[in-house]
Length: 132
Image (tube, rainbow, N blue to C red; front, side):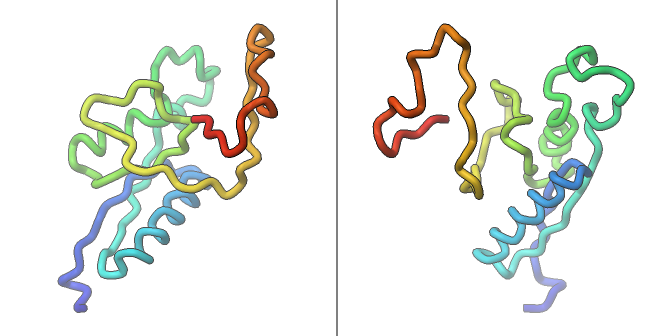
């Protein structure tokens, strides 16, 4: 296929090294399924990246690492964005949704609970339980 006829999808990402690695990985997975599509990374800094003189909780904003990317998504500057799940707010911005979650490379994540929840232990869960 002639490159001029290929569709280009703009992918929003933070400029951090980890975010770009994650975004390139997502693109590589999509290219395996859709080799005819071109992807362009649109990298940007977020409030959490820019404000370096205050502890994050003192900035007084929510979605410090996601808001700027969500604005770009909602304005049509990018077609989709890649986030670390840990950075997502508990309530999604109106007009956005989690479109996909990649399989984890290392499933040895930890579950940390308050002391008053000590009866809920990972080893007490049935085999093949999902936490999420």
